[in-house]
Amino acid sequence: MKITKTPESIAVIRFPDCDPFNHLNNSRYIDYFINAREDHLVNNYDFDVYRYAKKTGRSWLVTQNQIAYFNPAQLMEKVIILSTILEWNTSDILVEMQMWNQKKTILKSVLWTTFTHYDLIHQKRSKHNAYLNEKFSEYENPLPSPLRFEQRIINIKQNDK
Image (cartoon, rainbow, N blue to C red):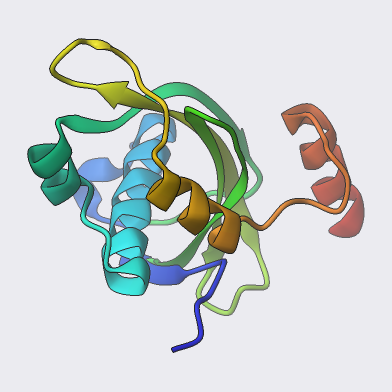
């Protein structure tokens, strides 16, 4: 089975998540991204974070979000959400998520989320084990050169012209 480093899924923008202009509310983008990432892990890597937490007493906490908005997602619009691991270390994972229109011609938003591996029992940061390190190494999809979020957004805007 070929493993994709950038899984994707479809979501429909729902009425309760929209503002009075029928645009997806800014704060709800993160919910759509996180839900899609959970689906990507289960559907593409057979990895259920909740089963993992129950079994190991460890999970990941979101420790940072950086988001840029390009074009509004509209009420009842079908969007494509992609996610990929840009980098990881002993206890953190940086995941980039992108939301596109259904044809993947209009970028809606980009999110960088840092997840920190966390020991739920001892309430402290935890190191990734050998199995996780192996998988992250296999799935990592780094940018051609290391960038800060702001520079990544500038590059995306320049490529969109």
